[in-house]
Length: 246
Length: 246
DNA sequence: CGTATGGTTGACCCCGCTCAATTGGTGTGG
DNA sequence: CCACACCAATTGAGCGGGGTCAACCATACG
Image: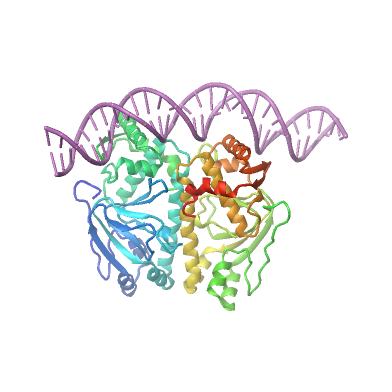
């Protein structure tokens, strides 16, 4: 879990109402789908989990057939380069969708692993795409999800300082957790320093040092993996150049 | 133009055959669309240009209504940060599609400017999306284009050396030009050193130095903006870690 | 209590940035 | 046709952020 105490747990939804944490709930509500439409969507959803930390949802090279929406827990995606170094590509929180970058190929371009206890909904992509031809709202939603990821991917491409990167990481995490009903100022990192460093393209030592510096300046407190943000504005200011378009 | 001598010029297509350089030609051929389908697609295409270097196709904040396929010339996309620095996001060659990252918002998130004489086809996106609901192949093509861009965007996110970055840039350019019938080993850069540097997140001086080093090592020759690649394998080897998934 | 693993801290170094001077190509006016 | 100006590109000198390497510390587990 993301929070030490048990956080909001997604309901399972039913034939008429989708899971509240589902990535498609917004689309459903906005579009006002009728019962028949919802039933169609439900047909191609496969709930999976809970699975323990370390479980792989898919591995690089696996044939691509489904995208997955995280319902609880955190999923990390990564690749392993020629020298055997792990390169973290992203972290996915409840409500977020994994596997979109696989669409253009036949196979997943990366690995996805659970960082804690994770449950997901799998959507068969071929069936989803077919359904989208009959549901313009769903198609629009898929286009938006994909387009959004293009922008997300450009985020860390800039030449930003270690401080800016870590600030942006924390602000992004904070916002996303808050959007799902978790605390925006106090949370537990489900990923190791090494994971964060790899994601931000920094050395683990640098992440450690920046955390220390920020703590010394009173911006936040860090204890192990527990983070409390004391000056959200300061962090936001640091992160602004990185997060510009988000 | 990309080449000093007049290169292959796109035919204008007709009611029954799409422009050969069109980003959707592959989809059309693969799907074997009938005449009625092609006519539908043609209805929502608007040829534009030729326009001189410096012309803006759209600017950041403009309401988004269309994506554009480059037919001739090079287009550069960029944003301007708070300090007024230009940040280059990408270069688009004939056959490539601009504006996909704008889909999830109401407005373009960046500027697009012609680097030389440019002609494009504009596709009204709402109309394209509507048409896609009736043409599963077109929908699939759009999904793939979007997904592909997610991967492209991750390319320069890694922490690569200046040499690796420039090599990857040149290899990518070479491949894309070759795919359109231009020479893979000899071409003219339509962008300035500053543009390249900004795109690669390097200082212009560094780009200059790396070019010199590569020339000294006999990997390529550079004169002004003319580049000739002498050892494609050497460049490929350097670029491999960056281009991994492309 | 010993060991393993992840995190922290310190010392040092290198790649690429900054600043500054120079070159060279291009355009313009005399 | 030349002189000058202008701007992009190049080259050099010096520096600093962040990486590397290594030692140390702390919590988790056998």
